[in-house]
Image (cartoon, rainbow, N blue to C red):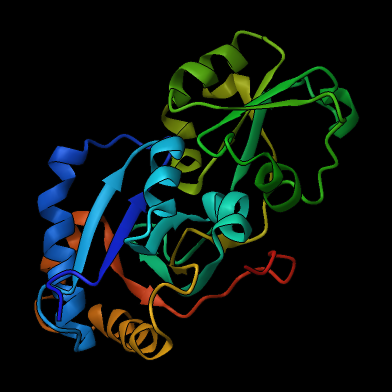
Length: 253
């Protein structure tokens, strides 16, 4: 049996991270996941890419059997990559679900129609369908609203406070920090999303056999409850995993 049967690709566009710094943590996680799942030692490798393009390239390669991606990435590329969810991540300080918040300058936006000509900036901006149909499903954006990706959230919020025709879609952690900003009084939360998954672990294009995928799913679900699991989960800001709870309108793989 080959030493490495599958590669787990971590991809988190918009969030800071260095592949070199992350690799020892991913190796530790992969080793723990294999042990919890009963897979042969050395049968799972893990790699990280902080970019959408790089993550897609890795996931399209034949050796990529699994993906660990934020939910916006899953919405944007799940059908194309034939991603079949196994578990959701239970993230420290957030949980398995989160609400996204749309923020604009106080007093400037009175409803969706008044955002005509605006640009929405977000770490999830690479996934416009997620922004429009998932995060802002009940906030019908005008068709001319532009959606752009950025990892520079503080700079984007300063642009909002300065009165530019810009709004920012924040994840739950980012939204929780709004009150600490010196210009917080210039900002207003216009809309919150329903609760949505934070991140998904999925099989890529059926490249992991069903029996092995079920064993991995069971192992991941156990990880947060096993002695010493914090050693492999904590450095990745995880508490464990739960069964997928996807919105009913999520496109199937």
